[in-house]
Image 1 (tube, rainbow, N blue to C red):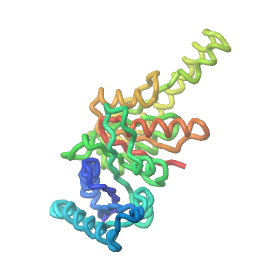
Image 2: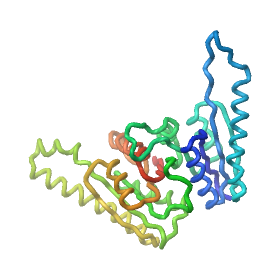
Image 3: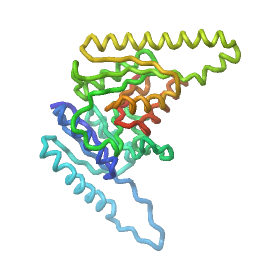
Image 4: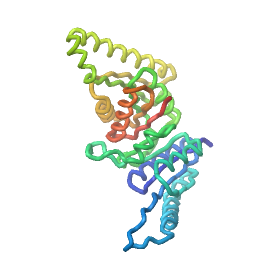
Length: 296
């Protein structure tokens, strides 16, 4: 039996989608699934309202009953499920559970919608993406109940080395089979921060600089693609110009991608901060689940 899969649920439609995906991965991996719901502390009521002394205990018991209801059909399908309803801050409790179990994967739902730019990513999902030291799969309600594990995977990268780690985790977690899985390695170059070079150094310098940047990106992706092709995977590498998050989301929709897998800590300084922001935007708007893989 494999390591644990931790699924966080708040009993919403996003939580239901997270359970669907977590159960599918757990079944494929023959891994036990830890289904976690967190009851947040209840603020004291005013003088005019009396809060029952055992309200917290009642809420936890009701949550446990609901978790058992959700777990029942998963157990019938062959998944080993353990249910936990715990008090505290959701993201902190989920991280503690993942660390305690040495989980391979945390699965969380996010209430955001690919086309709904006015809604932010859920706070629990955002915190997990920021704090987790292990892979996090963010699932939208629209991702639904999958019939099987994804076979078309988009691997975005902002640097030359991080795409290999994301690919390795996606291949291992989702049991991507050589000869069947299709991997798309992708780099989007945002010109905007570099346009100052054009103003200071002139158009001809910037044109040469742009060509060099794009060539270097193509070369780095092809090196990574060659290593994956040698293992029998169908791999395409692609470089585009534009805002990374928008390009990633658009490409996922264009190609019918089933999973986006990207590293979140592969850069340093400002690049690391910007790429972290890109990951959050992709999670919010992608038309499929997004696997984020933390790296040192």
